[in-house]
Length: 344
Ligand SMILES: Cc1cc2nc3c(=O)[nH]c(=O)nc-3n(C[C@H](O)[C@H](O)[C@H](O)COP(=O)(O)OP(=O)(O)OC[C@H]3O[C@@H](n4cnc5c(N)ncnc54)[C@H](O)[C@@H]3O)c2cc1C
View 1 (cartoon, helix red, strand yellow):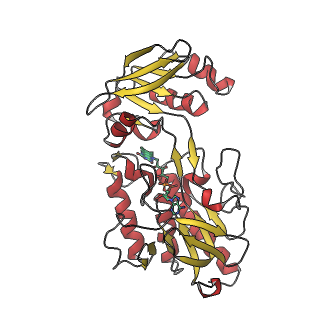
View 2 (cartoon, rainbow, N blue to C red; view 1 turned 120 degrees about the horizontal axis):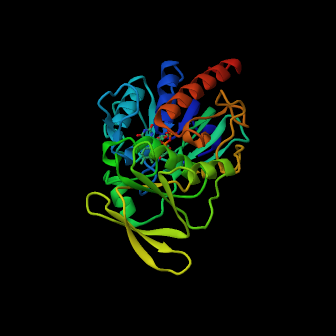
């Protein structure tokens, strides 16, 4: 298709987690007629609805006093966005509320590439759909890094006591008064371990080296915490348990010996990977790959007309409610910017 024949949108939103759908709700209610690329389900990490599709109970999102299952909550985000006229890009093309009856479980397109050097921006989906957009909201999240063990994934997805987020899951009753393990040695591993000591009887920090990578102040915090015990020079090679984790198998990185350690929960704290490959370096990112916001309190990026929301631009909080808040900001910023340009 000749690029000048492609439809021109006011705002395209890339990603369909809490940030993407909240941006869509605000943009739709502001009569911007937003178009969302919800993303394609590609294995365990990415899927329409975002990371909460991979978890069981969410207890800390306001408005759900009895908790809510992650996928159910994301379905309500989707329905609310669609109700106000949001459109989504599936393999069958652009669809509105009446067509997208499969909810989040449809073959939606990823954005494969964008060209931000031309205006309107040019956007290409991995199912062949192309369009142009005056404004772009990037809400593609950040994948938690996992060890990649089969039993780790099985128990993480079934709610069997394996998690990549202590703040999200640590307070669940299943972890109370248990001995827990945290894998990692950086600042966030110390933060997660310290947080877990509120609930656990003991927290083992499993680290593959003989000293923490964390900053001195954070390392001291872990080393001086009587509830935290360091397990140096060790890597987790398996997670044991049928429905619920019972132990982890760890290997000594120096002599190769393996042993099983009984634990009631395993938390991975080995970093996150922001999903920005499709931008191909056109928007400034920091040294960890998170998109840089030009103004901490807003959603503006290094490219005028491109706004970032949610975990893709937030290495600090990475929570559903903060992602939703950032989605709201991005839609309002986009709306004001479009008005300033005299576009919409
Ligand atoms: C196991 C687990 C449990 C959690 N539990 C909680 C909890 O209890 N409470 C809480 O507040 N937070 C929790 N979190 C964190 C929470 O899920 C995230 O903070 C939140 O989902 C971030 O929202 P987001 O919209 O920024 O990104 P995400 O939810 O990650 O969504 C990103 C979306 O972008 C899509 N995407 C990626 N690339 C493309 C592309 N090229 N084109 C189109 N789409 C694309 C993805 O498929 C996905 O739909 C948990 C996280 C995990 C991993």
